[in-house]
Figure 1: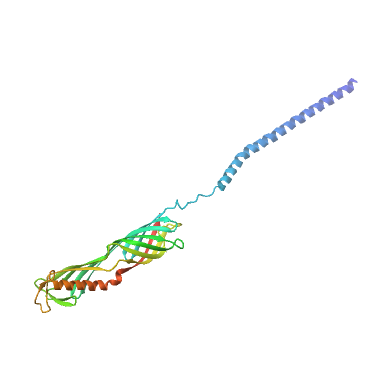
Figure 2: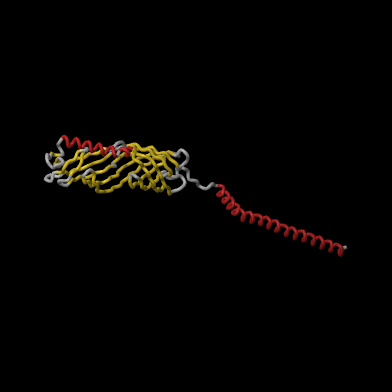
Length: 283
């Protein structure tokens, strides 16, 4: 019996040890799996967070510049029949700009007219303001405006050598050799004049920096105003009967007739044509 009991005891002990070992091996596997799961979780959590951050960043729309953030100021240079100039534009609304600038040009030339030698100088000086309206988009525009300063005109000095003949108001005179005819002349227009322009281009474009502007129009400056001032003695065609040109009523009447003649010749410039082309930059 003792021999039989010992194997059974040994079998029970072995069985207990096998179960214990199995439970020991099973526990580490679970712990490893759990630990591994935690490791995977702890390892994958930053990646998941990073992925989430990138996805969130991808979902955030790229910054867009609103119209209010776009600069609303542009500057430009141009050449026109008013001279060389510069201008500045400001956007007031989506299709409405305010634009202002100045022009300058000077040209000198000598010429003879009715026996009088002139040394003339053309002066173009002006400042202007326009309201640019874009009815069809942002290129074609209609631009009513104002020449807020109209310094366009001409000046001249006059000279008639002694014993030479000249004509004033249809009357022929002879310049006195002892006191020859000299004088000055001036031509100008009203100092402020309305303008009307149309063209293509926008000094304050919405989607680019560099731009251009081409315009046609007119300045409604009225009739020319000519003023002649003569000094010296004017004699008749025979060189006799000399009178002071500055004070003699007949000579002054003929001077007035000459001024009217010049003004009539310049009547087309009541509507001074403007052709302009320039380049600009929006800040």
